[in-house]
Length: 174
Image (cartoon, rainbow, N blue to C red):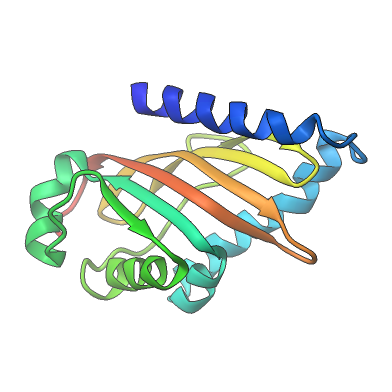
């Protein structure tokens, strides 16, 4: 939780500097309406096993950090990942991570980004082209939190700049 607070403050601080350099063109609701389908699409593609799409949703120089917590020993045995948190940098390595989460660890049934309920997501518009998203998440074997996802708008689509996840519970063997 402390990591979330510090990371969020740093992201907000860094992005606030950018937002002062240009005036806002869009109201927050329009920015969110533009970004949200990309989160939902990521979820749908993951659940179809389309990790190529999931990896391509990240920028080339993106970073992903995941703390496995109570699942760390099981993840180490299943996938060999020893770092805690595991930090993955670059679109190709992130694609490999999501592929291994399906093929090696056997995760499926990803749930997050709901409008309401236990897996409802929250979002903070930092500027017209940057949104910070958080949500609880669940796979068939793990539950936890998306502490932060930084989505940035490109010319025609939104891409992930970074993701920070934290596993809170191992609910089935890996």
